[in-house]
View 1 (cartoon, one colour):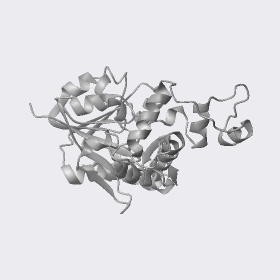
View 2 (cartoon, helix red, strand yellow; view 1 turned 135 degrees about the horizontal axis):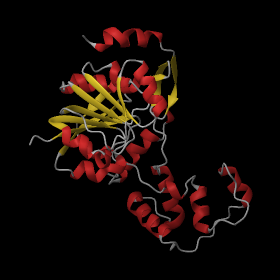
View 3 (cartoon, one colour; view 1 turned 180 degrees about the vertical axis):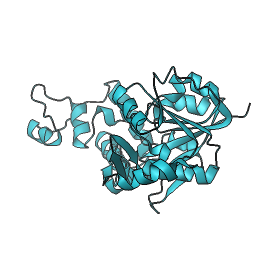
View 4 (cartoon, helix red, strand yellow; view 1 turned 180 degrees about the horizontal axis):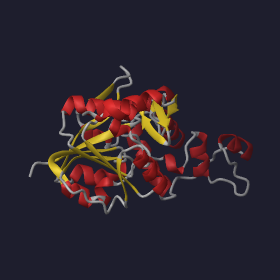
Amino acid sequence: MNKESTFLGPFRQSMPQRTGDGWGGKYEAHWADGLSAYGQTIEMFRVFMSELRPRTDIIVYPGCSTDISPSQIFSGRIIYVDTYKPAVKTLKKAGLEVYHQDATQYEPDEQIDIVISRRYGVLQNHAKLLDKLRDGGYILTDGAYEQQDDILHNTQLELIGVLRKDYTSSAFVLDRESPEDYFNEVETDEEFKQVSALFDGSEQGINIKLVSFKQAAGVVYEVTGKEDNILVEFRKIVDQVKEENLPNLDISLNFDEINKTLSKPWVENEPSPTEKLLLRHNLDWVMLRLPLKKMTGERFYVLRKVLG
């Protein structure tokens, strides 16, 4: 019998709901009896099921905490794994299959069809799970940027697409067109402008520290006087900033002006000309990262194990 018709139907109806603006934009969260489920995650899983029709006999969710979103949409055997005892106790009380174990050491007793990983280094840390993943099985992970090399160059895995929200239609989609562009930096001024228009808008739900085209253009003009070829010129300036080799800059930005731009004002040392340059354009050292060709908020990267 489908789990949703027994446990999850009543569970969903009884769970309080919260709607607000999260990192992924508009979201709906449900929670009850210490359990949680997330509307965007559930909708992305729904699209995954509809588009790829995967086998769902056995699904493993390492590092699950109290999130039971998979049980809201999948009907197979769902195995939850976590080291946090209160979370394990809560899931057991709800009648779910859960193991109190280090997810890096967990090894299922059968081949599995899907591994779900939220902000957890599944590729680096779960060799046992990957060994048990059936050929043609899937990994759904949302913490993939730091795993770029593993994803793009792993001969056992194929990047199928990215589950995300389409901000034009507000529908959730599986983007299968050039999914590697979610890892590749912009290469032209036109791409830079297009992507900046997306993450500059708070309504798009992308709230991350990246340089926008407008900011880069301002820095380029101030340092070089140039108004074109912004991406190339900005990269040169970033290299100079990192090497602390910018030419002498005469920037008249005093302490009062600086303090207005900072949540924790500097009170001890006068900023260097380079630091003043960044501050003038609402940048800081951690914001010298260029945007990627494709940007999105809440997402899951869909990887498929290559047939052996």
